[in-house]
Image (cartoon, rainbow, N blue to C red):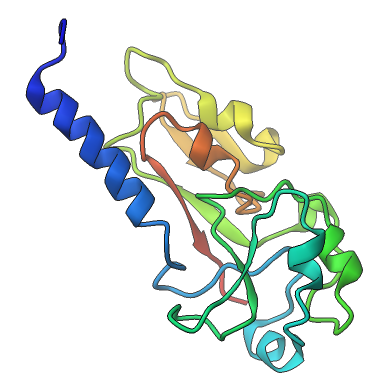
Length: 178
């Protein structure tokens, strides 16, 4: 184990394990709907559970809710931390009910990234900027402050592309309620 203590090895393993387990269910604050989703109450009344958005998604990041989940069964949602959305817009184009509407990439607001500064390595010696490099709209969604810490800006779409790029578990995406 050259240079790696047992404590570091197990700590690394359990951090990765916790990251995977925490992503199996939608966030407790509610589901993150695909781009172009109308307000949640209207969405639940309008969505036909047809799976057109699930089938057209090239990233396979749209998931139909199952009975054991705390989301209306059959309705589409995202886990952008686990399977990021590339904001292609195809889901809004194929939705027959109007629950998802076409929307321009920079106008998408499916969630908002949050950075846990206690685990973020950006301001440390490593100088990581993986989140900024992964962001499709870096000048609008994220910036590095003079302190070296990342700051999420109002233009964050919640796509989640920053989360898997992060070498730690510092980033998560939370829903935005409309």
